[in-house]
Image (cartoon, rainbow, N blue to C red):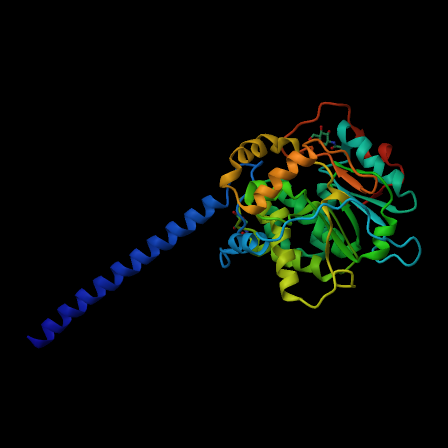
Length: 355
Ligand SMILES: *[C@@H]1O[C@H](CO)[C@@H](O)[C@H](O)[C@H]1NC(C)=O
Ligand SMILES: *[C@@H]1O[C@H](CO)[C@@H](O)[C@H](O)[C@H]1NC(C)=O
């Protein structure tokens, strides 16, 4: 009799444990789904930043860390050396799916070659990109091959190229305005920053590192960190978070936090450059969002109020400064199709080195 009761109790106990376990599991699945949805928004929206599934508060951290510091407009160039050693290899890297270059990009790509006649110009097709990953970081191939869209691969390859060869990476909708030589004499690694208004108005944080333009010396530890982080960000369905600007921004902040004593001008430093240098103009695709958000200024954060005020002060249409090195033409290659006459890269840039 005793034994029977005991067993009975035990059974009840087990059922309860199982019930609780299933309940917890359901909550976990629910939380995961909510997180996935939060990290998936349409292409033109900035998604909340979440790193992996371990650090969901990164977005909150990004906001807190920048809410009280208002950006400063840069109106002139910092001092840059005209003589001395180069700290970054003098190589321009550009990538496209194949050797056929659509019409609109041609003048912009040539601008880099024209402004850097004694640099090497390296061009990487999808095929060449895959090959270099195979040769240098083959453990990335399963992720690389599985990315749902080509843009993820285009993002990932640039970190590998800068790490393996060093140099400057520019998206093919970047336009070169003047030679980068003085800049690569001063810095070992730098990343372009998007106009402050972009991340502030849309996501209420400042300091968005844009991977459309970046440069690093060969073997730089920040590029290594980016490459090694790709697998843990792989799960993000949105390209900004998985491989793109949000991925770089989060990693940049982690790099700074983990190495507080590194000087941004030093050998292992990373310089998040003022938007005026490499991204002087705004993306017109966002104008409508800006307009809508800035209609209710009283409900916005101090940072966002600053950004709305900046739009009023400086306007939406911004021509580059005399000291701007490049300009992003915001072509949105992943959503637009070009109709103008394409040419082979060899015809466009005879000095090209095919990767
Ligand atoms: C490159 O891709 C475009 C469109 O995807 C195609 O029309 C063109 O023929 C391709 N060029 C080469 C050299 O394969
Ligand atoms: C890539 O996709 C294949 C097939 O769907 C899957 O078996 C593999 O685990 C995926 N790789 C990664 C790294 O997720």
